[in-house]
Image (cartoon, rainbow, N blue to C red):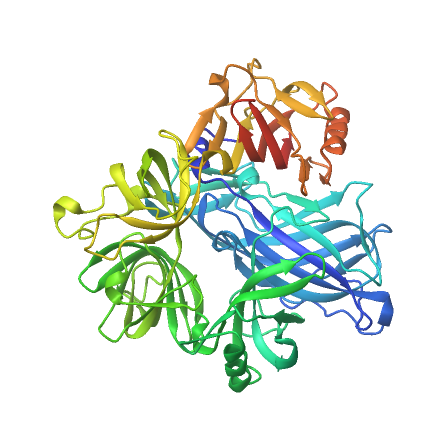
Length: 629
């Protein structure tokens, strides 16, 4: 299942997470479901206080895929007695790869109280649209099973461990997380044409959010309550034009920024403008979940034509080149008002003009900018009129006329190796921008002359008052900020945030070939696992990836030890032919592993994500997936 070509793809490891928030309610209803069609049967509304409300959310960490679009046709929760409850009211087409560092509220369904022990997600790959990056360019990939056959509908089932069932009952809301791990269960082979993705999907289940990220909540406005600084929406996730997936309340405060029909507001003024816009206005809010109260608190709210694809076309992606007033965005999401969103593998030419409004997001209040501020490497969302260059190639080249439109500049993450750090400046050997390999970008014109254009081998970053204490030469680092305005480098980038090597997330990935191994570990204790690096069956994939750094574990002085972190939620999964089982505790996971590995059962792959202490040679794994043959 694991191929040699996966090793090169693992430089951008990640996972997809579904989070379900189960909230007890006094009304509504639920019912058992049959296999879903295009529109799943809605639960009944007769069980009163015997029901709870399910808030389902979806997210995707930074991963290998530029697009990973499949149809999600069903999500069932299973009771201890074997009966199931359908939580998804309609088939939903989702591009999992678009949810980097973001969680989206998916649905708010009403289900009966009870003891839930398993979940099943049905994915339909029949019309899947998957894109990977090869030599800096987006290329199509085909999803296949382990035998190489094209995939259709796939049911992905996970059982909770016996000590951590999901209990839905009146009173305090419960929390349930499902992690659809793309890195662990997708193997990319770039030697085929088209590229091939071998899929063995798996879900990791937890009764907590393993990672707290920004949440997004989309849907038409229902009402505004100025006295509580809140508003209510009908949940309408992703790019659906109809269907309503339940209602959620959004809380705001004096620092919440609003952009409504292209105009910016802050605090109460924004809530007033939202009320004036009226019920039915499409909204998109970004914020966080307050764990204790299960309340959604918005930091940024967009409404009306400020929501992508509503009344105006949008292009979202990274600027890979600029010539005059024309930006080139390659590997972008195009969202048209008339026919929805799609991933464009070709180039999108965005034309700016003197009347193009430009905003720099991430500040309170939002900062106004100019078209000249947009440079190579900038993450943008451009609003205007989009058209395909060729009607026969809707997924290829596009244009967007933004001369009378607007552009929102987003804070952009960059990765690289530190060459020098001192006196408010860092020089990087730049490796990637917003997850794209640096080879995809053309930095011509970024400086006042060719001699001062940005040089990826010596990328100069202004860090201001940021603490550079942990920035050591030769170590990887992540910085977040904005490229310097076009034609004004150096410096090449202005950093607002930095993450040095010790704080970068780490991913361990190991495989043991097609036949696997019955002895993957030299030690299996409830307090830790030690990889058996002397095992002759170890495959070509055996690395810890930390940002742009790849550590070959077979070259380490000793085998790394895998342990549970000292605090915080964790989630671990064993994937087997007879079904997957998820564990909230490391010791329970290892105990089950000891039972399974009886000398005849083989392990073919392992991924673990967390933090790596190089001095102690210890990986504190917050999540882990182990795949049995």
